[in-house]
Amino acid sequence: MLDLVTNAAEDVTVLMDRIGRQAKSAARALATASPDAKNQALQAMAKAILDAKDDILAANAEDLKQVEGKGLQPSFIDRLTLTEASIEGMAQALCEIAALKDPVGDVIAAWDRPNGLKIERVRTPLGVIGVIYESRPNVTADAGALCLKAGNAVILRGGSDSLNSSRAIHRCLVTGLTAAGLPEHAIQIVPTGDRAAVGAMLGGLNGAIDVIVPRGGKSLVARVQSEARVPVFAHLEGLCHIYVDASADLEMARRIVVNAKMRRTGVCGAAETLLIDSAAIGSHLTPILEALTEAGCEVRASAAVLKVVPGLKPASEEDWRTEYLDAVISVAIVDGISGAIAHINTYSSNHTEAVIAEDPKVVERFFNEIDSAILLHNASTQFADGGEFGMGGEIGIATGKMHARGPVGVEQLTSFKYRVHGTGQIRP
Image 1: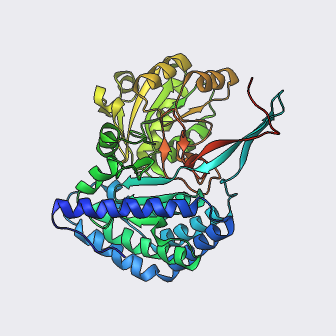
Image 2 (image 1 turned 120 degrees about the vertical axis):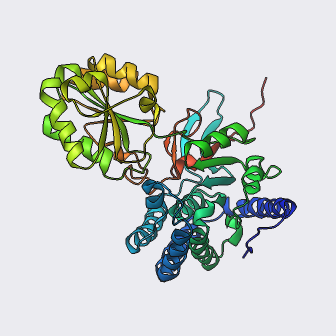
């Protein structure tokens, strides 16, 4: 196991170079590892996490103690905190990933050419994936397991605030790899909080890293997208919208809006802006805002909303561009589906949007004219999650348009190659 490194920058450079070389070597072995071996490792990891529950909780308590008095947002503390239930959920997620179909070698498409050539497009691992995440220790297990299932080696760089928790979880992952006879360097964790390690990963570690996945706040993702010299799967932020049409069932709309905002305010799928159809002002606006307020949510209202429901905090231009990750929501009145589409296309981060409506024409326009990664009809934005999509978890939500988009699960962590079978053909 690697020791914690906190000294000179050149030591970090040497450390990261070694981690890169070890990952590259492990990736070659994983590319041909059997599904049974990978699944055995995942099951052993799950058992090791349950067996080490007390150790993980103790490490997490140490992390939480170190951030006391720093004035951190409740959403940050929520992501950092582990409980017995969340650790059991972590282990369950590993078992669910083990139960997924192995993507490596899957024939995506096959066709015959007139000249007799038989062509197949086949899934292959990406190679080495670098995951840079902030204080979300559960990502250590999720990302490690998903990358392994897809045949990739992974280098994990968690937040310095969660280093003790992440290292405790990582030890369990290594136990699982060893039990299955797979290389222990298939899942490595950067054992230092030095920011130079991030810079080294963004540089690609001398060609070792094939793709970077950032999972964290706006500043982290912006830095990764700006400095990375390898491809990036990223979302800049989860600025998610809900549009309530005049045709929406009121009780359904009320339940969905409250859940989308308040179930967990610190997740990227939490709703941040509510748009109400101007034709629904008299029927839907006040009951929905009352439900949000009763649930403990602060409402920041546009001028049109304030005319109907005075006393709320006025929304500024910046509010429409803000991912609160807190019990705060901005609310505006829009001119039907056209107004909703215009607002969302102006302010959205292309993560997740929802429409609550019974009019099929409204739903059709919403789905056709908004280009976010995830669109929902009559459902909470909190379903923007790989586990809820049946993917057995996710490594993040990608909002770009290249390769992976939406929940990045096992299949999205593969590339493909072509296999061409001939019977002696030559090209004229």
